Image 1: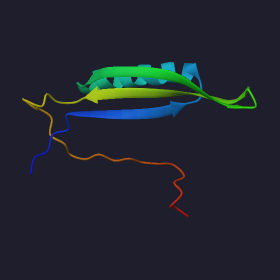
Image 2: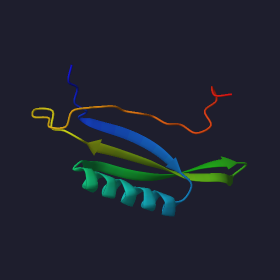
Image 3: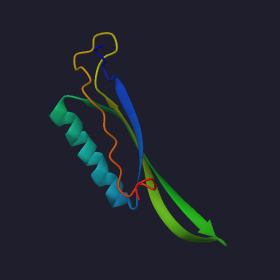
Length: 91
C-alpha cells in the first residue's frame, strides 16, 4: 500500500524568543531544501506564576508542514520516526 503524508502539525516548546526565532528559520530552511511548504507558523509566549511572580517562561511554537497536495500527491511516505531523549519508559 502506498501512503502519502499530506501535512504534519507540531507544537514545540523552547525556552526563549531567540530560540523560537531560530527554530522558525530552521523549519523554513528545512521546508525549502526538501520541496515542502511551511504553511503555518505561530509562536506564543507562556509563563507560570506563583504568588504573582513569574517563575518560569517559555514559547510554544506551532507549525504546519505541507508535504503533498491531497488531490495529486507526489512524494510517497517511507517512514516517520519520533526520536525522544530521556523518555520515562527507558530505564
